[in-house]
Image: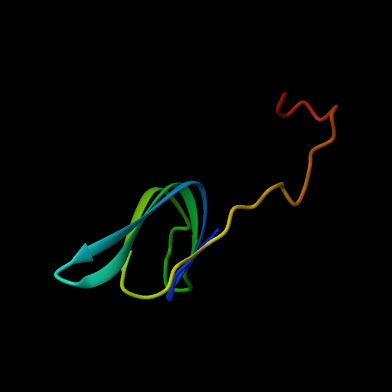
Length: 77
């Protein structure tokens, strides 16, 4: 899960880069296969997202899913 000043993201892959340009530090966050929460955004699912911000960024890795499918459901392995 990634939280920025304006949005929340759930993504399968997140790469966080700290950048320094002319003495100004900023963050570049790249996400793949993401779900985006923004009340003004019409589409929620995006393949690739790149966020660049001078504000705080919170990145959390969720260790296990909140739900699990029964073994005999026919989904997954």
